[in-house]
Image (cartoon, rainbow, N blue to C red; front, side, top):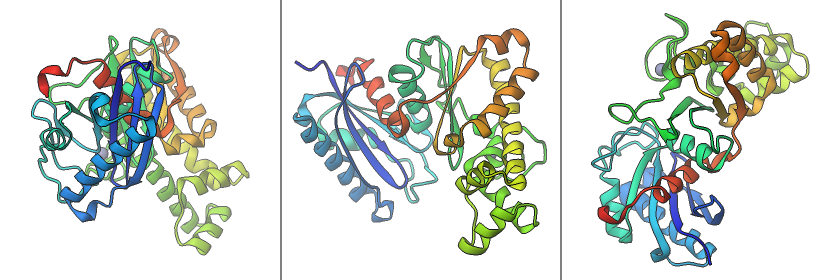
Length: 325
Ligand SMILES: [Zn+2]
């Protein structure tokens, strides 16, 4: 007999991922499909429910076998009201009462969490941070996000937005960030920033390898920078070293503020691996208080693209949802 089952939907700007997971974090069924946000709220809601139904079929159970449905969403939420505010990746979605709308369609209790917090919970419950009391999750992809596990629980702050690690200012008056402010970590060390700085190096003639990419493709990505650096391109290595330094500055603050036992790093751009993360960690170890630096391990995430959905499932499994249906 399977244990308790949870449904989970990770709603992204480009894809919907649905999972059915048991209380040990084993994935029993899954479905993935494009979000096609331009089709509007109703159609996307229909796709979410259909995707979860398909994941249930894959698991060999009906929707009614689910203890609850956890939904990870790409933006700020009102946790108590179950409302998704204005996610930048889902244009036209303003103050959507997602919990109510999904409960009406499924008759199953639903809870919301923002995707970075959900991914932190996923890594803590079922991934690299299993059994760790105080942990910080950092995801480096097109942006930089984070989530804080304090005393074994997700730390949400006053309005549920705690853990905005990407918007720590690490360079006053530095490069403009997507949020409109200057000098945020995200604007200096995200995959987007690494690609943009690689392109800049190419235009200035500081990287012949990236110059070739720019001539051929018309733009430069973080992956291009990583490949060029692996092949010994000096300009590309400098771009990575600069991003790593800012990441290191961010890690020093994370360590000083939260004194975590573990920092788990995930996200697409984290796949650059040691050329980015090695110097960042070294910077932290040489600039943070030695006792705090000695207490923290930095490890790669282990649940990959499933982190957000697994975290949403974990939140369902850890909470008595009976009263909210
Ligand atoms: Zn910012």
